[in-house]
Length: 98
View 1 (cartoon, helix red, strand yellow):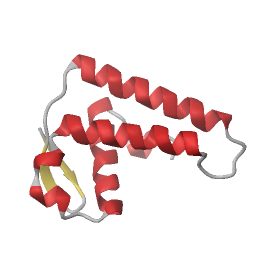
View 2 (cartoon, rainbow, N blue to C red):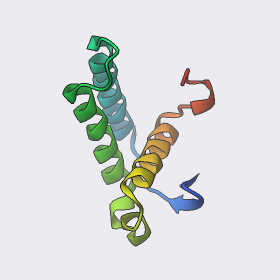
View 3 (cartoon, rainbow, N blue to C red):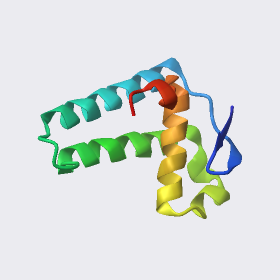
């Protein structure tokens, strides 16, 4: 599967239905953590939940084996992983309320 993000195309792994369900579960945990907050930025729990999503996406996508991904800044890597996550779950960022 090819995804365009961070100014280039990336070849990423297709994921299984079980993996898609895992990402959905992690997303629900993150949403639950966010809903507990009082609007003062990310709590430690929500930040950890978000990082869990990105780490699992990194593993599933196969990007951790691609040298060019290692050369990205942390911000660009997080942007790439968020784009991959959205692609995997079929989230359209232009309509997701962000």
